[in-house]
Image (cartoon, rainbow, N blue to C red; front, side, top):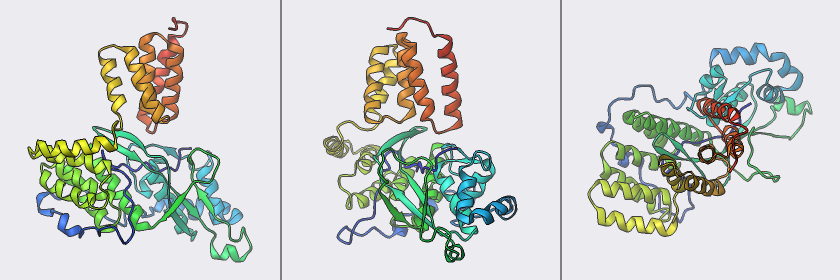
Amino acid sequence: MGPLLLRRLLLAALGLLLAGCAAVPPLPQVERLLDDAAFAAPSEPIDAAQPFALSERMRHYLDVEIAPQLRRKGARDGLVEALASKGQLRIEYDAASTRTAAQAFDARAGNCLSLVVMTAAMARHLGVPVEFNDVVTEEGWARAGDLMVNAGHVNLTLGQRLVEDRLGRDSGRTVMVDFDPPSGRSRPLVRPIGERTVIAMFMNNRAAEALVAGRVDDAYWWVRGALLQEPTFTSSYNTLAVVYQRHGRPQQAERVLRHLLDREPANTALLANLVNALRAQGRGAEAEVVAQRLAKIEPMPPFHWYQQGVAALERRDYAAARDAFTREVERSAYYHEFHFGLALAYAGLGDFARARREAELALQHSSTGRERQLYTAKLEWLDKRRGTRVQ
């Protein structure tokens, strides 16, 4: 079963920007940063109620198909068993897109935000108390098309229904639903977040996915919805800046970024986007000043060695590619593309045993069906080359 792990798509440069204390400068009024007239109407409805809406199929599944199980084990534990059992829902993790609860249920797949939303919608239908948690993890980066994304993690805590609590069934106990918890033996550090924040995350994901697909107008309306839903989820402001940049409005992108930099002057994501916005306006000298400031904070940006490795593969310098991908793995051991690049480098060097091991790791850490197909095919190819010389 796939992990219930939120891979929030936060654009190149979208870091998790937490709300600050009272001493931090207040966020600007959202309306002052929006420009609805500059964008075409969205191609789909932007509805805050959409993510958690239950379909008739979901209702039938809960009220009829697993009703005996829910009566026997209790609503919460019966639902958790249905989610965890391969013989029941058989949910698969697929980070390709952010689905609503109903879409994830129908597909029996989704990225982790989709699975969080689906589980919450089902639990609430059953009267099971739900709390959302933002899980503190080490920062990790991934790619989405030509954008870089930052990986976050959320999970759910399910309580006991009042009627079952009164019956003495696991009184006072809560269950954390997290199918891919952070590594380590200790209980993860979590920060409770509200439903409005989860909806903003959902809309921000949709905005990022629309940008990857080249649908800039749709991206604007999704991120606009996120900002209006939860103005303190500041990652959405950074997404808005990227939308303006892609729409050919670098001045508006700069305005949004500078508002946020008043709050977080050392945020590398904001600074990287500001460099791009300034360069797009022909203000190279100012951009260079910001770039130097960024380099002092982050001398080696995300995917630096990955890009070096790709360039080395293109010129068939497999030893240099191996060294570059190894450096990326050393600072991000669980990202599939780094291991796949290393597999290609080892294959180029004729070390098919190590190449297969890295391809296995790429498959293990892959997050979409397409990636799994690619890495499986690579493993099959490497199996045919077993016995070839090892350097």
